Image (cartoon, rainbow, N blue to C red; front, side):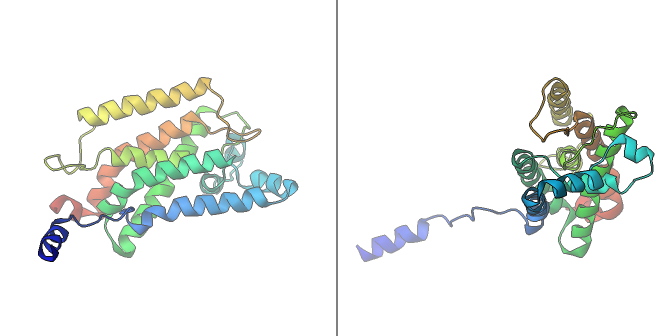
Length: 227
């Protein structure tokens, strides 16, 4: 009986870890949740000062407050808002982080790419609402950029290193993403009183990530195309 039990033990498959994503993947979800916790725990007057000082609006952008293109990424309007963004980030950041590689260079590339996607989302919102004073907050534009970038990366053996824009999976995902976000123009989402998470920012961030990921990888991560 002992010998048989030992043989059965040898044939048992190795237990897979529950969470296999690179540690860098959790960076922005942790930061976003932590910052919103601080934001939500502040006194009501302080919360309004935070939003007035760091949320993005086309009016303020026209006045030259370009730093708001970055700061608005790290504000959110509700726990539902920040947790949904964090979940999407966890889902779509992993392939991008793996493709960019380990080390300081890969980490810096991912962080900068994330921020640029967020900036593109903010610019898209402002460009299509140029005379509005309604503030926008959230990392949705940045995370939409990660979605657009991830869909073009090689996801299984036999696929090209970088899917072309006309690849069926890219086209179908883009159609679904654009359709979902245009629908949000007619549905009010619970992001916080007096604020919106604009579908324009989602679309602009997604298109930025979708288009820019190919030259970005060829410029900064040529090793990706040699694997």
